[in-house]
Image (cartoon, rainbow, N blue to C red; front, side, top):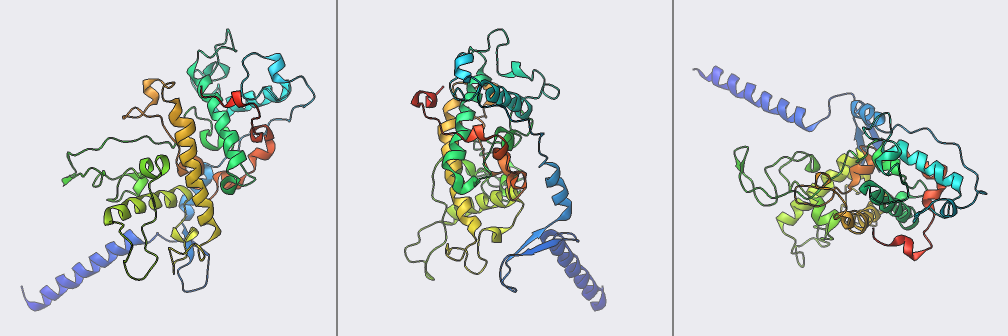
Length: 354
């Protein structure tokens, strides 16, 4: 092999490596960019039109039911064992039940759907069907979110449809996964689950379960120091990787990049961040609240097939509501059409655990 052949092979290999890097690090054109800050600072969000089409198909709104009269007798006066929505008129109560059926267990799409999915059709008042107990608690959770977490959900609020989208179990939920110390894919898998590709972490070699420590427990997320030197910052590389895994989840859930919340020139500065960073901070608190106090407490109620491999219930994360959109359902104000789900429960007995 002469020198020209060696040079040729070297150039070809370099070109192949460069082409591979381009393919792996850039979106295939065409792409759309939205400027979020000064030019030249990298404050741009990059969108792939092909992915936007996929996301749009997930953000379809259901038909809005006709409003009901508020002058009827109260639901608690007509029906038995109405613990949460008894303050509604009978008409409003029936409307919400009809909407919930369409949002969670539509009869034409879900086997065993319709009213019988949650009720004993021979005695609607009794709680023998576990899904009725769960639905009651989820109604309380929805009211809690709309009443206490306006800093995250705004006036848009949430309804059952925000998460369920016509499915008995939301399509994007999570449970704690067992650690696997076996060999995986030719690489030793450590206790954090690294070397086990996970969509939650962008299919990267980051910890595959960032939800248990951050969206159920309240482990600290900050890993960046506040000073140029590392004095006082004892965060480890491992903690940094956990945080990055969570950030990957945020990005994938909303279909956005880092600069949706952060200033590319000063990631750690809250003062220079976008308003969305504060909104996300409130969202983390909201998820911890609902996962711990509303979903986890239902563990004794759920049958085994509705629990994760570690025996915990299926819980919520950012994708549960957002499903790839920067705002769930692109910010459609469904709560405006169903204000009954925004009422703060007044009777303390209505907030009792099921």
